[in-house]
Length: 311
Image (cartoon, rainbow, N blue to C red):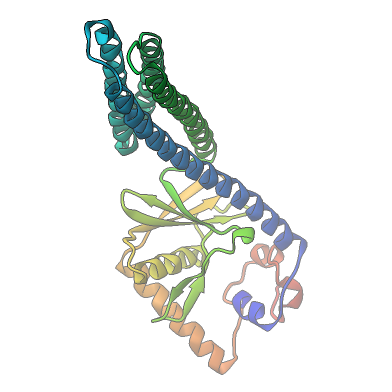
């Protein structure tokens, strides 16, 4: 009946508006996490690029040096600086591939130390140059500037990454956020051409290669997941599966309480049968209330326009 009434006209109420405000606030926070994660990845790539440029210019600077005894020490220092930079690049790549957050942070701390050491060594190499001093000095200074830029980029990457991780911890989010139903971003609709379904979950997580739709519900907290809410999550799972994603479950959230909804064959068939039933009701136009619970009826946002509401 609630679904049928929603098709007849747009329904507004204080409860619905409050729920919309709560959803919008959560969506904004989730979008903020995604934004910070993307910024961390962007600056991490800048670190890699600047480190490579620093290495290239460091090697170029060495090529301008005379290998006489008077410059042997300078050459050795520059070569050592390059070794430090290459080691930093290697650790940066390891950090990006690491699934362990603590291990990744440890690598990043080592990288920062390597960058500082490389800068000190390169600076000392510049002051000891005696052959082709002007050109070699310019090139080595450029390498030094790139290292400084890499260090600043690393700082920004770490800063954005930590802020995103802190926000994820506050929201108790496990997995990578791949989709957020934020109105300002106009996210795409999930779609099932086979069953004629459209919808937007509140957000979608990627956990170990699987997509997990998450639906948040405001208002009173039931003792367990409600049947209609389970069907809603099942519909999202069905649409994601039809798009080619690997889906084994979804999540229902009532405030801080989470329920994992297994998307098995039974739920899949139940969703499909309910969709067929709704299609049939659209044809007949005869829809009735399917419960006798005064409490549920009293809290319904469509109570005022319902012809079968309980007194």
